[in-house]
Length: 152
Image 1 (cartoon, rainbow, N blue to C red):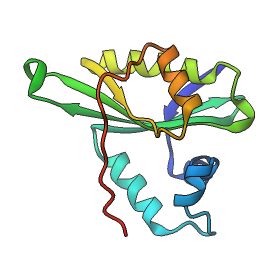
Image 2: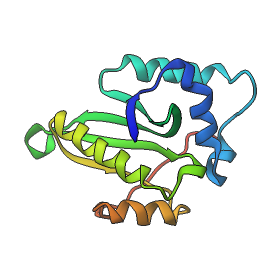
Image 3: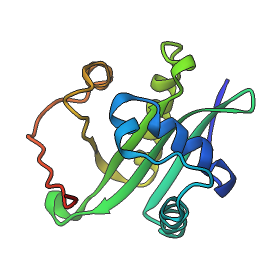
Image 4: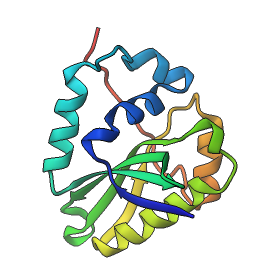
């Protein structure tokens, strides 16, 4: 059985390792020990913001997945809220066991409980398996997403 909870500071090393465990994450994360203080700073900001939630999925006492939810108020749609999903990861040894589907069912219920009108996410075009997974859940590529890197 998979359970979901807010991440704790003691989870931080495990979460950063999960973020680094793919070709894209390996290029941008820093796994030095101890972790750079920037990870703790980010965790503390997320944890203190009532519109952000860093969520872990656990199975048999082990963290098997993670994601971040950000709840955003908008003027569009008559002043509605949106749920933005970022940093989705399932531990490589647990992929293909339905954990991602369970995690997204939990997210959908969480977004409904927060009165969100829609859920949105982006996925790097270099992650076709992730894109197919999101599409299987009913997500559609209805918009063209763009990003501007501010790092040289």
